[in-house]
Image (tube, rainbow, N blue to C red; front, top):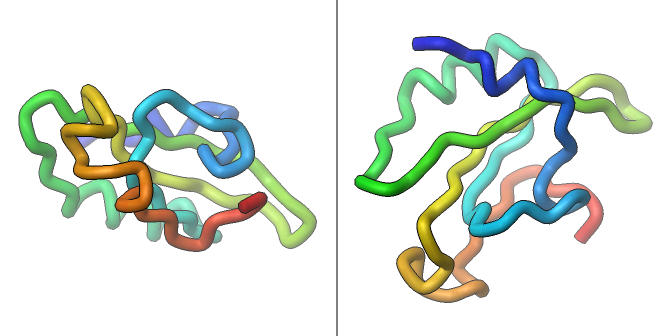
Length: 87
């Protein structure tokens, strides 16, 4: 599996909103983000999103999902954010 999404210079969706981003996790080590990616399974129409950035602690990588619509996911309150920043 390619991990090219981790090369994107992109902040977390909680800092820089992305349309229909519904689930993301932050990792301080790229290797952990890669391992997480290897275990993700996608439903039809779902897309992996992710990136790399840094904050006052240091570098981070994040991995998430984009769905066709928030209604497909359930409700905007069902958006899952792990290790979020900026909320």
